[in-house]
Structure formats: C-alpha cells, structure tokens
Amino acid sequence: MAKNSRPRQQRMDPAKTPVKGAVREPVKQSANQKAAETPTYEKKTPAKGKKRKGGRPGGRSPIPVTPRATAMDWIAGARIRTLALSVSPVAVGTAAAYASTGFSGWHWVRALLCLAVALGLQIGVNFANDYSDGIRGTDNHRIGPSRLTGSGAAKPRTVLMVALFFFAVAAVAGIALVIRSEQYWLLAVGAACVLAAWFYTGGKHPYGYYGFGELFVFVFFGVVATAGTTFVQVGTVNLESWVGGAAVGLLACAVLIANNLRDLEHDRVAGKRTLSVLIGDRASRILFAIFILLPFVLLYFFVLFYLSAYYVYFTLLLAIPAAVIVLTAKTSREFLLALKLTSLTALVYGVWLAVTIAF
Image 1 (spheres, rainbow, N blue to C red):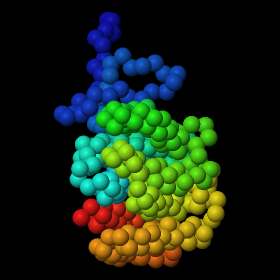
Image 2: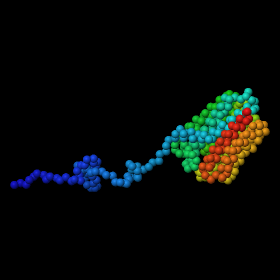
Image 3: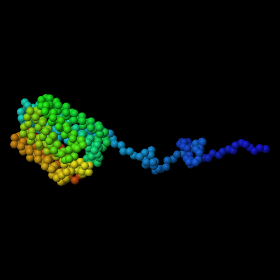
Image 4: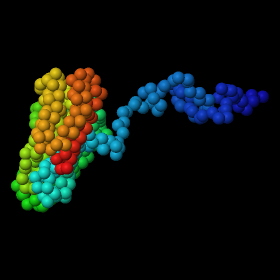
C-alpha cells in the first residue's frame, strides 16, 4: 500500500503570527540569503533613547537657517540714531539764513528739500556701508548690532538697491534745489556728496578704511550741509553758518569715533584701518572728548550775539556723561550707551541752537 501522499501540515510560528496594530515590515536577512517570498510580520517597538543618523529625527544634520529680514530689520539698517547728523546741520543752516535776511529771505520749501537731501545721503551711506562691509566680510564677527548683509538676513544685491534708491532720492531733491535756486554749479557739489558717500566704504580703496572717515563726516555732514542749506535759501553764507557748521560737524565726528571705538579690536583684525585703529585706543578716547566738548567752546560766539544762546550749554548734561563713559568704558554696552548720548547731544545742540538764532 502506498504511503499517504497528503502534504504534511505546516505549524505556524507564533512569533510570525499577525498581531493587531502591528506594522508590516520585512524581516532582515543576510546578504547571501534570498528574500522571503511571503513577508512576515512583527511588532515594531522603537528603542528608547536610540537616535537616528545625524542625531536628529529623520537622520538629517542640522542646517543653520538665517531668518529673512523683517521690516524692523530694515528700519534698524537705516540706523535711525545717526539721522540726527542730518537734521542738525539743516536746522542750523536754515536759522542762519533767517538771521541773514529775516523771514523775507526764508524759503521753507527749500529747507525741506535740503532736509530730504541730507536724510537721503545719510540713509544711503548707512545701507552702502552695510553692503560694502558685508561683502568684504568685515561684519562677520562684529560686536554691535548685526547688519543685513553680514548676517545673511538680506541679499547683498537687495541692500545695494536700497542704498542706491536713497541716493536717488537725495539726487532728485538736490536737482529740485538747483532748479529753484538757479545755482547750477551746485550740481557738481551734489555729485561730490554722492561719490563721497559711496566711496566711504565702497570701491576698491574706500577712504573709510584708511582713517579719513572723520574728515568726510566733518566736511560733508557739517560744513557743507550747513553752509549749503544757508546758501540755497538766501544766496550767501554768513558767519553763523560757518561756525555752526563746524560745531555740528565736530559732533558728527564724535558719533563716528564712539562707533569705531566700540568696534576697534574687530576692525583691527578685519583690516579696516579706521582713525581709531591708526591712533590707538587711548588717543581715540581723548579725541572723542575733544570732538564732543569743542562745540561748546564755539558756542560762545553765538552767546555774544544771541542772548538766549547760552541756554544751549544745558546740552552739556548729555555731552559730559558721554565723554566720561567713553574715557572709562570697558565693554561694548558702555560704548553703545555713549553712542546714543552723543547722537542725542548732536540733535539737541543743533535744534536748540537753531531756535536761539531764529527767535
């Protein structure tokens, strides 16, 4: 009798029995073993504390992501504190124009156009500085507030376009001034202002990297801005305009020195040879004190002719603390406080002096 040919019943392995809620997953096999024709099932239990490759979920390595610049970042990029350096010379220049001829020779539209030129140049040079220092790598390890280009929050080309836009605003306002005053030779002065603003940190050999930044600030944001404001309104420049321009120019230099002192070590490493880098820490502190206090010596000229001008000496309540802080500062935060006080000193000094001259 033949043997029973019925196939032998196969026993099921409990470990391979489907379990409710289990995750379907092929069993791992060795390299020389064929893949199983019928997939098996096993309950997937992730090991506690086990990390995937890269130490992060999904096995991906961490990639630093710089957030895009917000509206507040762009406002900060304009460096609002420095705008006092634009308001002061226009205020003093306009007051000097009034002192020259009275209200009959005062043109408020031209005064506003002068303010537009000054603000356009100031904001433009701030963004141009952000762009130029950023692409050079000067701002890679800066101590103060981060910059748009250096931090990667904005594309360099975008920052450049914003800088050029504000230069264009200044140029349009300047052309309007030239047309209204019919002093067409002032076009050359305007072009020199724009070029000086760009080459402060732009170009292959920016003069701001060779210790001439303070000279540029004194000339263009002090004397030229003040005397130019007076001239386009009354066609002449009086002594009040020259002396007032020198005073506000010195305060503008003090603002720049305070900023460069804060970044002194970083600028030295980055190869940015500001005046503070060239003359050293101690000499820069002394020079700052001279720049912020000398305008109050020049103020005596106005006291001789305008009785209420002595009230401007109350601005020393801001200037003296700023000088003391800079002379003794050891941290970046102290220099930042001095920078704020110096900017406020420049604004209050210029506006208050203008009021005493005009009224």
